Image (cartoon, rainbow, N blue to C red; front, side, top):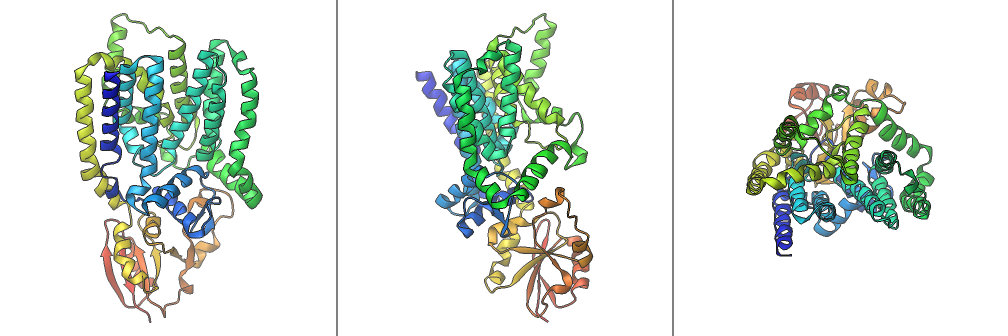
Length: 480
């Protein structure tokens, strides 16, 4: 009991140190985090917490649950950097608790503690635990789904299946169909390997298939009734089916992509575990798999294989294999004793340094926070703000100011816009034709440094620089 109290105290300290300290210095970045934050901000603006909007338009990019998490944090702590990063940080804590409890049930308290430290100090967890994206919530809900199934299967107490179905429903509310399909496939493959598919033919599974739609329909049914085929086409068609079949970033669609993510994501522990594993194999050791180990291996390999088959690849997609991998590694690192704990302590210090000296300045570079601060006096006077060929996305400007930006384009660009459902639906900044601008009023412009001359040539007038950010510059154009 004394050891367990120590384990829990150390784990809580690691979480506070790595996932809370310094969050107030981490600005909202473009091009991804800003979309989540702005959507959650507009929930409060429109007093509508059911139908996501961005730039005042209904937005079908992701389901509702993560937006609710962000909106709740903003409601308690205000619109701050700390509040924006609170939801993923709290989900890290919940994941650490879940991992410890399950690891203790599978093995013992010490192995569970070691697995929790590996999880908390792995590079991918540290990265996603600070990112304003849905993936940490997906990890927790998918892991809870699989753990609840495993507990029910192993104990022959099938009431656990209700928790599995409920957690899968929350995963679908967080990320879409993958929240059910991924754990469902893992469970099916495991039972096929076990030769025990009859474990699904129990009344709890039947009632679970009634519980699941009852939960997901809380949001999906009203969305369909409100938006009809547009919701189906964009949410399911583009953001789910197309991600699986059409590469959003073709350069990343290579066979070795997730191998690299695996090696980097589990840094530094995998760089010790892999050599040790092959050393044991050379010495004649052969792994023996019991039911628990088979479940962990099928879980990890299935996640890797599924997303390897997806055409669109992201750093975060394979994150749901974290729990089985760290539990498998923990049994080895548990034998290293004080060496492991020293390594965890060193990594904790390294991550604290990375937050303040690497992440904070890098995130500010990929954010319009500095431009937003400089623009506030002008925005308070009612000045409209536009962007002209900015370097990257600048939605974070709207996040911090509450003022919508508009992208200035030529009429030909608007005319040739595709009416088909493709990746252009992710371009959510409203467009305005340059000839339609009212030059009798002062304007603010965000522009990439390489396009300043072109901007001033397109709109001749009296210009003056306001702020030169790391990626984009802010200019003021006087009224004609």
